[in-house]
Length: 346
Ligand code: GLU
Image (cartoon, rainbow, N blue to C red; front, side, top):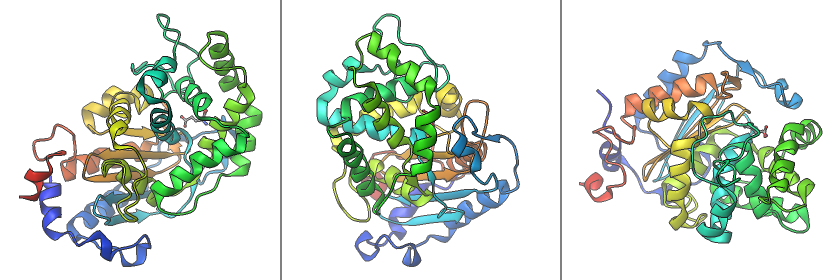
């Protein structure tokens, strides 16, 4: 029987104001802490999958690393394993870049450049919607590159800075780009270059292709750890406000757009299976991270660099499945009161 998460939590929660971003004095609720530790232990020696090598720098990741972190909307953290270890965010930057595009350009203009249909194709597929010539959605590379073209700025480093600044506000700490991964992606990213030129040819992006790709590769090369990702996810879950700093990071009116696209397209060609088994808006990256959101309740992050054939972290998927089932987090689970806050507090 899943633990009915939020009602129990609401009773035991302490004020987030008593807590600040340092993990040492985090509040814990033993039962949830135990679930996180148990799941970490269970999969610690699970050894399937392969570390991504198509970006040469990613091949250096330690395949043994495995971290989990949960962050609640009232500022509690539950972490296990290598949760402090930094890795590049890769495609987990995509929902945040989509959010920034919506905030800056609004729905109509943003959706001129990218659709919201699951493609069922691989993350790096070189294909546009034949009816509209747009990329299918902002969670695959084509869509994310179209979004990077929108949010890039002049000079190029200012667009990158604007993205990193937002991500720092969501994580609640200073973040930086990994220069080696950025260089590695820039030298070897010819498939993404091909996607960008296809979109230039179809009028989806402007002629500043190198500038667009620099924005995209830089976004992907942001270094984060599990706690950062969990806080970013919790910020989305918390109507755009960072649960610890209280800062309003994202415009609330667009978060539902982002969560919807994450729900249907976040796990590439595994998205349907994920929605069925885990039932949470989520995004994975080839660096080995997975981020998931329980709306109005919590953010989840798992890191383990060994990937399955679809480019998703193997232990990440297993851990999320198990967390969702033990804590009753699936969006349509009867124990999940979702965003019905009043009911949750009763
Ligand atoms: N930087 C990676 C690429 O564009 C991101 C892919 C991913 O994480 O799915 O190939």
